[in-house]
Image (cartoon, rainbow, N blue to C red):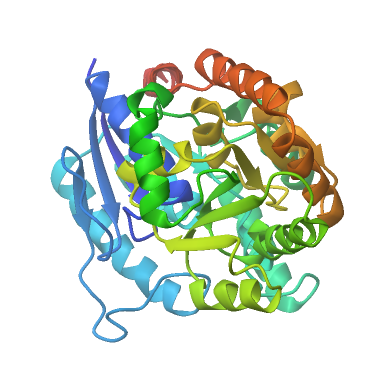
Length: 397
């Protein structure tokens, strides 16, 4: 049976990073199974051919405001509620699928009004994310208010999709969410898009040349948000340690993403690694496979304990060995084939990269094992069938 799903995305969908990619790939995979997906989102963002995206009206002020943890987000969410309500009343969806806590709170209101099921797509803790983004500090009145709101939202949906088993434990232990409501659904990857065989050696050499990357260096790649909680300062400090050693094959870094480009370019200059670290800026999702395939090693220094880390799967699908901080989420994706470093250990990060840079055979073994693991465990068609089964179970009630 075809199910009409109203997805609520409290963000400027589509942008080329993180949770946006999960929303995009879920929608496409569910549509491939014959379901109708309508996405309600903020007025900014890039339209995607083949997706039914309904946007809010622009704000009468701060028209170019970049949404983040701020007081302006309350107004964005008010506009989103009005837009979602109009769509829901006119089109009568079968089910509401809320992304993130704000989308789920809006979805709860709609699900009660229309008497239809609500699914929460959990992509990170509300208060944990606000602390990561330095919007507030733990322990104060603001923290306790949002912690109580987070608990309230976590108990509204009939089912919660979590991006990792670590998040499932977090919901059960910290917020007492019943385990039967939680469905672990790790981020996945489009294996056709992130297929290493799409690009010839000549294409990759040409792209390296165009970017000014020397042919004989070992290239470490990163693609994601350029923020402190993603560990970008640690990666740059590791690059500085590798440069001062000046041993063996030179190691260069391709740091792709946004925002804060001026900040991190200046940091690279201050650390004397501006000649070893390239910041090309925002990379469109369609171009990400080619840019990542230029690398010999991938790196992530993300420190969050509750957010997923879907970028790992793009690295893995392309057969890149991965150096990662040792967190439960990273282990869930990489299994026994990750090159793990204790969280915050910059010297360890540099040492792990140096070790792989000097061992092409090990890089190859790890990369092949990670690609096989991705194909076996983390594909969107399989995830969509799991979501479909959940939808059918909730609607049958």
